[in-house]
Length: 442
Image (cartoon, rainbow, N blue to C red; front, side, top):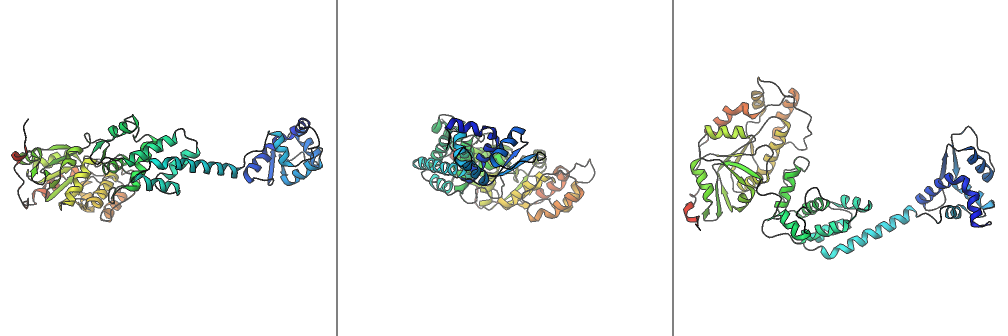
């Protein structure tokens, strides 16, 4: 540099905007190169550039494009006496960090974060952390995005998730209680927290096969989360989640019937069983099960059919309690029938019941739709996107889309009741134990 630093910098100041553009190119490429654009140059900028490059800029041009290698050479010939790199260092008090250098620093920080977390990753947490390190696995994109954005306490959130995955309970436990024990905050693993979302991602990566069978997260995010956590003995809510049932048999142990269920079956009573009670049963039985979507239809069928027939109401989208009960009934060999509304949500729920439990479509054929859609005040079908549709339901769905009309199972009540009532009630292989054997009074 031929002149003192202060004078040299003052010599370059009229072209500061051009050097800012050159600086951006240096950050991008890590070297001198490329074309810098000076938009809407002032007369002073045009004159300074003419003086430096020796070629006048056309006054009519709205912007000036400068080859940075040419600028570098011009600077070396000028009284500045050094190249573009030295000019940037003088103007901006040091060379800017290049994109490559920033990436290297970021990667070093990423590796340091992962290394700091490895002691907390035990059991199922270890392979999940390894998948994050490999740039794959559920939750990787979320973690990396938050890291790149410099999220405060990301290390703390990840440490909490790994400790949670490393200490999953062997017996059912409330998620809020579990979170309070780990973090001192019952809401630390809620669905709206980063730690809660990452725990769900980690659990999904390690969940037992079949845990999420037939269910798309986009269709029912709350149910998806509840089933995922239930599979590892964490209850998001095992009291409010219920299922309406009539005519069920259930046993707490191999030789001990649940007295509440037995009394309800004997009297034909309808009960709403919470998830915690469904989970307590070791055995459930009902040779044939009739599932309906809507409580009014369920109530009417209870009035019009024999008390010994097992009826289950999903109350719209299935709850975690309903899914667990139907899983167990399907595993026990029960024959399940599913009936729902002829709208897009109804087709989605029917698809789930068919795919997950092997349920048989019940009054969901095209002719049933036409029967349900007769008369009344037509309702438009809507534009909901279906992620999955069972093949057995495609003809009905095509007809529904053709007519652009929804229909409801309440319009088929007589046919539904006739189907249930005409089916003989088979006897179980062995009668349930007497409830009195299991009742213990304080």
